[in-house]
Structures are given as structure tokens and as C-alpha cells.
View 1 (spheres, helix red, strand yellow):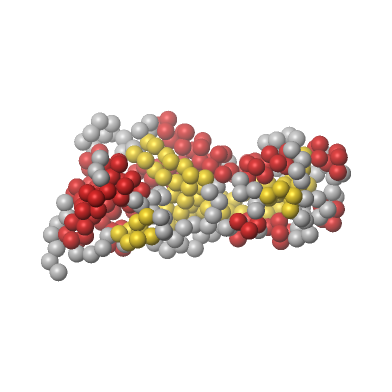
View 2: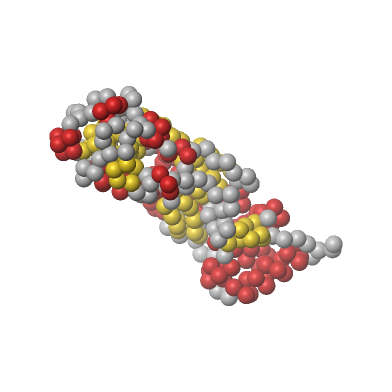
Length: 304
């Protein structure tokens, strides 16, 4: 099949669709209606002689041809950006990422704040979610997940580790007693994730380490775990970097109940070619390394 060289404007439309995964969202950014976006994508596919997008859950996913085209589109966008105001700073535009609640609050937020101080035209959209890495990641440039991801057509980078432990509030312990053995701990209610809704296998540690513990209060949000534990709802299996900042929480049996889990960052290859995405990824890596002592936690003994 004879193909023509694609118009740079068509490549830029594909670049925007790859970022959002949706014609409507890309159209809003470009000032076009979704029908026009669809027509331009069809024209690009005709010029390239193949499909650049495929249907995926919740939107559109790049095909291998589309990934190659977006790589070129990114270079076109960078060249265009060098002609406009603020051309000396390539770290501009919107980066879309997902991460767990705790990582978002204590690692991603300061990392992005520091980056935006240097690059004020950068925007980061951060969606908090606890799940395994997606196989179709339309509309997401960076994912931060717990546990090693099994992905294809993506780059996975190990960021670091964090520690979880059993905690209870001082007031709770004064009323119910401080457990000094696993058998005594098993008599207390567990504050943790809703087991039936947990999507990350690596986070099943309390059911493995303390299978006799009954659920006390469960939630899909780790901040609820912390606050429920502080309120005396039971014994919480909490990230140490979140629990250790509260002096009213006491870590219990740290030698017996301790789980260390890795954070991984997953990126689409076409996203990583964008200076803004690369800058955010590096900022996340640097902030995780800086926070390493906090993430690993204090090995405080229970009852103190």
C-alpha cells in the first residue's frame, strides 16, 4: 500500500488522544469536536497505512504503529513549544498519574510541589487508587503501584520499599490491654482493607501473618485505616510512614508483624519521551529515595 507522509497537525491530534484516551477530552483541549478528532485520526491512519488506535476499557489504546507515531508527534510538539512563550522550558503541559493514597500524599505531593517551583507551567493530575498496574493505560502517563507489575509495552521502575506494622492507640491499649504475643493480638479486631475489594495481592499480609484476627473496621482508603486506629476501632495494619507521625499510636510486636513492600512506577514508552513526564518520573524517584528512612519506619516497641 502506498502511503503519504502524515501531516504534523494530525500527529499532534494523535498525541493528545494518547494522553487522555478519549476523543472528547482531546477535542476539548484542541478546541475541536469529537467528530473532527475522529476524522483526523482516520486521515492519519490512511496516511500511515494502518491502525494507530485500538478500543480499550474506558477509552483508546495505542497500537504499536500508534506508539511509533506518538514518538514522532512528541518531537513535533517539542519543536513547536520552542517557538512559543516560555520556550526555554520544555517541562510544560499536563502529566496524568495514578498512585496509592499514602504515596500520593507524602511522596508525590512534595515531589510535584518542588518541580512546579522550577516549572510553573507544569500541571499534574493525580488520581489516588490502590490497584495493580493496568494492561491498557489510556490517559495515564505514570502509575505508581504496590508490588512488581506484570505489564507489556511499558517500562517498570522499582522506586523503593515501605514497611507496614501493627498499631493501636494508647487509649485503646489502656482500655483493652497491650497484646504481647500473636495469640493475644488475635483477640483484637483488625483495621485494614476490605478483603473482597482488595486488588493487590501483596497487600494481603495481615490475613497471612495473623489469620485468626477478625475484621473490625475495613475501608478502601488507608487514611481511614489510620484515623480509625487512632479512634480506637481496633488494631490497624498501617504503613509505618503514616502511623509513626502520630504520637498517640503505638507499634505492636514489630519483630513478629512486619511487612516490607515495594513501590513500582510504570510508564508508557511514548509518555517517557515527553520532557514533562520524564521530569515528574525523576522527581518521584528522587523524593522516594530522600524519604527512604521515613518509608522504612521506626522500629518502636509496643507498650511504650
